[in-house]
Image 1 (cartoon, rainbow, N blue to C red):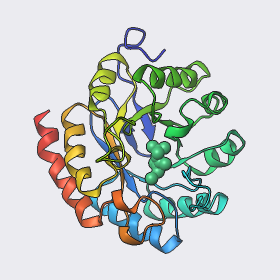
Image 2 (cartoon, rainbow, N blue to C red; image 1 turned 30 degrees about the vertical axis):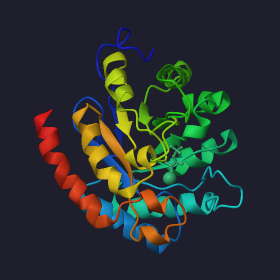
Image 3 (cartoon, rainbow, N blue to C red; image 1 turned 135 degrees about the horizontal axis):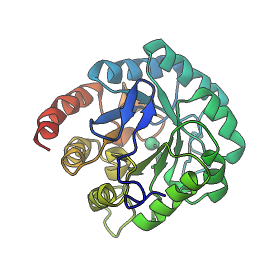
Image 4 (cartoon, rainbow, N blue to C red; image 1 turned 180 degrees about the vertical axis):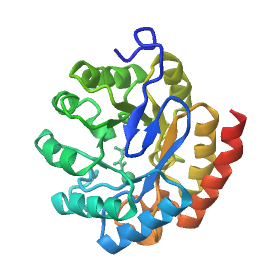
Length: 263
Ligand code: PEP
Ligand code: MN
């Protein structure tokens, strides 16, 4: 079902007033996590005024350590909804557990499956029944084929509004947090009809590499970006080192224009 052979036209995913896929370039941005309402509002206003089409922020956070901030859960969802409504922008947030699917689907406009859950097949089956789009992130050690098969679960269960996200994979390389695999983007654009977005924040783990890799993503045919931006990254509760300052995000949005005009 995910293959272009079965479905030659690009799938267009409807997200608020925006479309993702089928031409155009959609930038979704915001902090890693919902922290306080004030901070989320400041970060969200900054990305909205720079041209982001949607806000991202996690209420349920899949942290490597159980002692790290785990997210505010249901209160975080409500805060994110409130800020999205204030700014008139759709919101995307991660759902980690099948038990939370209904609650997340009720307050968010798009549900994110995190890298660590890409092969949580019960979660994928549950999301296949939801009438909201799903942003499916590539697993840390997943082959492209594994990602496409994970997407197949969603389509087979009845949800065709699926976006694939390349967010870097584990390799022997350690100078960056992950290795962003742009081969996968060009490959998936040829083989599937689903929109493909790139997350250069988790893909590099390094703030100063996010802008160049975003431009590279635009150049290789991605349909959009998922970027972490924080009003004050040095104080972020998670992923501050890879979060852009608002002024860097503004520069990124301007820098994308000539690249997109050329492709
Ligand atoms: C995130 O988007 O903040 C996140 C946890 O991403 P990933 O699942 O790609 O690590
Ligand atoms: Mn993050």
